[in-house]
Amino acid sequence: MEKTLGRPGAPVSLSKGERVSLRKENGVQLTLVRMGLGWDPIKRRGLFGSREIDVDLDASAILFADQQPVDIAFYNQLRSKDGSIAHTGDNRTGDGDGDDESIIVDLARVPAHVTTVLFVVTSYQGHTFEQVEAAFCRLVDETTRQELARYTLSGGVGTTGMVMAKVYREGGVWKMMAIGEPVQGRQPLELIPMLGRFL
Image: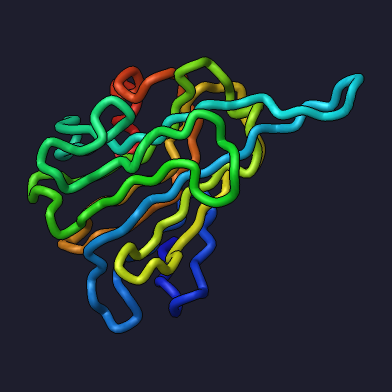
């Protein structure tokens, strides 16, 4: 099912598998967007009250030309080689409100051969998604700072990776799709052989 972006200040709430076209109400294509990803560590109740475990998740953007991976932006390479995608830096705990990590995509500069950008989250230290809550990804119009669409994961699973969403070209128009599928892998490059089914 495809939704349309709402008016500023009224982000579209996406469910797994839903899509949204990255055009504004007036039909103008978005050019600069930010994928914000966030999560909170689950509080553990113990003998002496509750405490949080620091959970270090890593957001990454993997660029594909059809089925072929061609580039990546992640904690070890903060910019794609062509400069169209930039990771804003690593957050090692998940502390605080709002986005824990962000990836900025200059849609107008993404090379023409790139058909899909997959956004994945992995746990380098081996924490699973059962140890986090309120994991989400949200698409923001970076020029106006308005949130456009949000997808919140429901229920944690015992894997160390998650394919959150993708931004892809269809008929010359950029679209976003909420995915929310668990995968096993501690770093984004380990996931690449498993990602073909999401393209």
